[in-house]
Length: 111
Length: 115
Image 1 (spheres, rainbow over the protein chains, first blue to last red):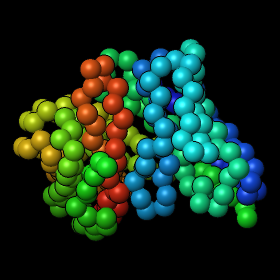
Image 2 (image 1 turned 180 degrees about the horizontal axis):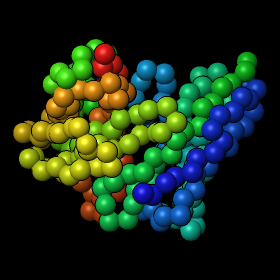
Image 3 (image 1 turned 120 degrees about the vertical axis):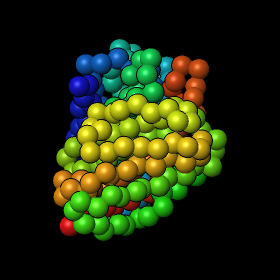
Image 4 (image 1 turned 60 degrees about the horizontal axis):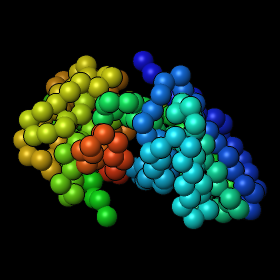
């Protein structure tokens, strides 16, 4: 089946640093979503991207829909301790309601 | 805000039991989904429904069934629970967009343990 390669799998960063993570696939997607999941909770939608090349911000978060429609990245600027969690990408396959999810990037912020 | 509510946060059942997981959304969404989440495997789609009484198999439907009798409620049924169905189960819902590209909103999950 289709797969999304999300990297890095985990990262430790210092508070105040910028963070970057990305998802790539061999499939073409109509939509890219980025979620954050805290321990014991469900994923919460951070950013939704609908067009190739689209760049969207949500506070300190910025995400882009790749031109080829096969990739997306998420940047977090000036990280803070509450950014800790698991970040997931999800891509929607063209012509379906189905989303494919990345395996997540576990972010740990050192104060 | 979209609210997706799963009936239980934690559930412990025995092998062979029939298990019901309930999900309710309050935003009149047409689409509803059930996923399971396991370490290292990410979210895997079990079943989804795009309308009342309509359902389609996802990637891992074996051992599961679903019921959508009302638009707001989507139930996942483990016909005869087995230990390999111990997992975190997540329900999601979304609007039916013109091109199908509406984001999914998730509940808080049910952590199910089968003993």
